[in-house]
Amino acid sequence: MSSTSNSPASSKELFGQPIGLYVLFFTEMWERFSYYGMRAILVLYLVQSTTEPNAGLGWSNSEALELYGWYTMLVYVASIPGGWIADRVLGQKKAVIWGAVLLVFGHSILAIEEMWAFYTGLGLIIAGVGMLKPNISTMVGGLYKEGDIRRDKGFTIFYIGINVGAFLSSLVVGYVGEVYGWHYGFGLAGICMFLGLFQFIIGQKHLLGVGDFLGNNQETHAVMKNPLTKIEKDKIAVLVLSFLMVIVFFGAFEQAGGLMNLYTKEKTNRILMGWEVPASWFQSLNAFFIITLGTLTAGFWATRKRKKKEASSLFKMIVGLIIMGLGFLFMTAAALEFESQGSSAMYWLVFAYLFHTLGELSLSPVALSFVTKLAPAKYASLMMGLYFATTGIGNKIAGLLGESASEFGEVSIFTAIAFFCILFGIFINLFLKKLKVLTHGAEDQEI
Image 1 (cartoon, one colour):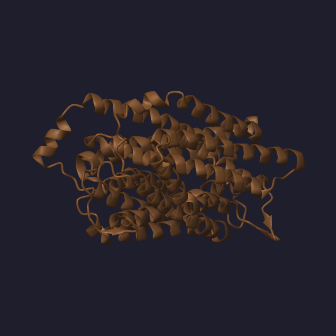
Image 2 (tube, one colour):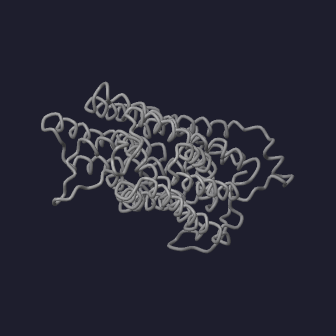
Image 3 (cartoon, one colour):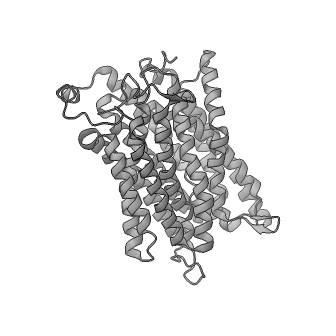
């Protein structure tokens, strides 16, 4: 049962937002620290030669990207059963706790230098993210009344928490993994996930009434059994259609951990003032830009909405997808420079990640908020799980695109991604008015 009720969990606020938001902020921060830290070194570990001092598994680039695609897809597809379990069995709060426990064990087991530990660890992380990710995001929505304009900004603040973790992990875990040992990096991710679990448990007083399972209540049972209304079906339809943009977006965005990660390592001149910048550090750029630009972007859209200009969630997502496409034109330029000079400059990556981040800020946190606005109460976590599953499909597509670079070349792949994102965004915009009708004014009364 959803926690997106018409009354917030607590009247206590900090910086104009419910205090519970910051409990969820720090829990997600540490969860993302562990996940993105592991992601930053996963492909690099897979392709590292077995004869190097810091030995890896010695896989080929295509083999590593194939596993990366499957892993990052399954991590998010697991959100569907994770959301169902929360809605029907545990409630969101307990699902988050169980997910965090699985993640602690998963990341910790990866510290063991055995193949059985490697695959077991990945499996536990997949299950843990599936339990935690959709449910903690749904709990954010439960902090706000219906029609509260602070909801989108609250999700952006929450999203900044995600990226504080991602920024720190790319630097810390990436450095530890590349310099001291891959398995030390994996183990560090497990320790930090434990901090997230501990913080969530001690912060429960600020989350009273949010994420609790109400399945034993007779009134709730009746609600769960009622068939969907015409309005609810329309809202689900527009959510599912919006998920197509999510798939395309993350099919492009997740090149960061795969093809762009390898491109950075192998074809970018990373010498800065006589020192070689670790390849994994470049993934921190996305998180850095989100931390510094997140509230500004949210403020821009809120101001635009107050001025009665187009600022619907669907429009923001369309704009985000187009900006993502523009970012890949910088990667095309980088690849062309490599073909002509034998290496490419770091600033191409900086500009690409900047545009990718601006696109992400207009799509990803907005999509999270959009789900909590439109999803029927009894399917709240399940729909959030479906959202994350679509990001997982995007992740798999990203892996397939990355693998194809060995056949078609980076110039072709980066350019194709750029133009597809731009053209698809323009195409969806043609149907914006019709899609907004299906929301039945869910965002019209936001104040």
